Image (cartoon, rainbow, N blue to C red; front, side, top):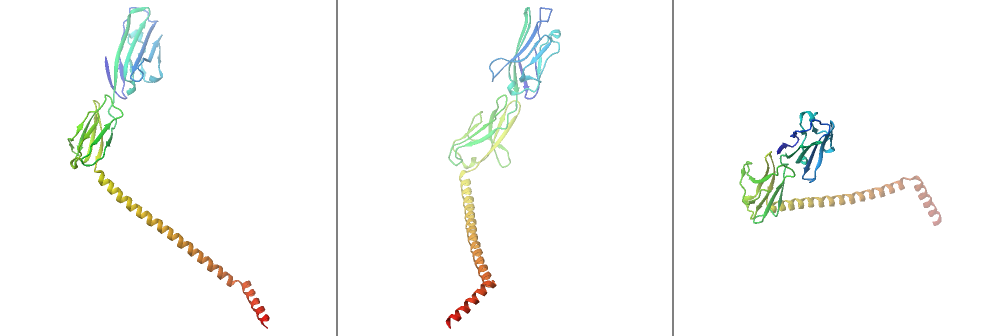
Amino acid sequence: KYVNVLKGQSAMLQCSFVSTEAATTSLTIQWDVVTSSSMTPQQVCFYQSGKIVITNAYEGRVTAPSAPATTKNASIVINNMQPSDAGVYTCEVHNFPDVEGQSQANIIVNVLEKPSTPYCSVHGDVETGHLVTLTCHSESGSPNPTYTWTRLDQTKTRRPVLGRMTTTGILEIKNMSQFEFGEYQCNATNTVGFSTCTIELSPVGDGVIAGAVIGALLGCVLIVLVVWFIAHSVKKHKYRAVKAKKQTLNSSVSDPTVNLKLNNLATLCQRQSY
């Protein structure tokens, strides 16, 4: 039996049983699951003597019948299903000493999920005559999405692409021409929904030239700023030195002690000359 459920929704796993033994004091119910990550049975829940034990991975998410011995119903409901919950679920019912009436049910559960937003990338030199490869991949999505590439014109209308395209998201343009430059869109699709990503193919030469021109201009501006800063710093330093020298001379001339010493020196020189 198969059960398909959307991510985040609830899954009803049905299991009923018939016992030839009237007494149900020895009734046990066990649910196990084998997922792609475990590959070995992992217990989901276990019922015995009117009590149910739920494992940590499903704690708070599993709902079981309150009186399975009376209703002969061992079904469970798992809420908030996640992609990691997908797998083969097994229901085992035992009512010792009844051997003929034991029940076992296997249910394959698929958790469906819309493809996540894919990642678009380009490989190779985007130049005329070169091989250019576009890739597209979604990290999640169940069932596995298929990928298609289209080219968008100026009005965002989808146009068929020229090149080898695979359903795994690869588009090869073996001989790039000027007519194949533009915007490309990848569509990741499965039975639940779709997601897209876009990428722009423009000649590498134009971008390199534009980058070189911008880089040269920025370099020139930087050099001019450095030269101006150095010249301004030197000029400012010289101005401060000259100003300090003038202030020293002025303070010396205006100092009365200095003037008195100069006058005394002049008088002494005159006396010695006589």
